[in-house]
Length: 449
Ligand code: ATP
Ligand code: MG
Image (cartoon, rainbow, N blue to C red; front, side):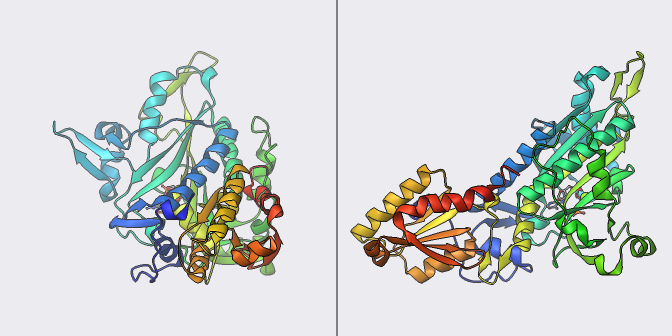
């Protein structure tokens, strides 16, 4: 992408309304724009990150055996009356009336709708297990939308729903999602810890919140330090096999949110030097809730014995538009964002130090073409701007590698590479730049972990 043709409205000043660093940096880097309280446009660079996050989620959901579909944002009130949640949901639900005075709502979640789809088609235990998911906008009229897209009113969520014949099978489905989540966050460069959680209004008795430790987090959490650097199950994990050992291994170490923590239990379970009590951001939440929706909505299948059995369900959410700022909270410095390669809006930026100079332009154009052909997701800063401002922008928007080329380097046949994360710089022959950059970037794409 040529910067001169791109749309990246970088702000010089720190926006006053932004209280936390991710919100400030997302505004300054031109990733998002607030349209009204809790409603955001995703500008091109922000959208690019969001779509990279989405792709990782889809790959790991699919790997675990979940199947993607897409449900509408608007749902009928009658469907929610069946489960009893239309009244129960309260003011967070945006209620809408159409021209025929029929009642609708902008979906805050999709348990009812997916249960309706399920009961319409699935009739036999032979069709189970089934896990269906979608990635769709949700609306919750939050009392206090804040921190940019961290807590907005309209937000993008991945929500998966599992259907099983028995509780035992439903727990297996839960374990598959649990392992998929471990892999998903790791691939985004995040350390997300599964913590025992309250099931809240959704109900049920098995639930984990996925928490990123960050000072700006809204909840207090308590966990065992070893969870912070525990190795993640590899891509060869057999999702058709028994995942209970992995699940037990992870859940044997203490981790709970403030609603669930039992001080005495925590102190007994975790030696003093291993105790982590910190603030955390909830980036995902998984539930097993049994027959809470299938019972009132009559979602049942015929079992092996020919009897009608109400199915056991679970639901599994990840807030994509919250994950993006959470990554920034976890990875930034005083100069701006430091993107992990796997979700970076661009993997590298080529900075032309003398745009307008015929020889420099020709050399940069050629290098840009070669880098792009090598499959590197490139931004090419071809603008006629002072070098200092280009460097500052590259640092602010957090692109992992900067390739710097000007007339002086051209003369000696050398290009400079700056590593955004460490600040380290290396000079190398122009002819080696593509291979070197590929070598740096490819392992960090985390497509192979
Ligand atoms: P919170 O406790 O933060 O209000 P929740 O428990 O109500 O969230 P869930 O119903 O568990 O949210 O939704 C699944 C995921 O969707 C959450 O883990 C979070 O990542 C995301 N999410 C929920 N509400 C918002 C919001 N207002 N803005 C952005 N993301 C959200
Ligand atoms: Mg939650």
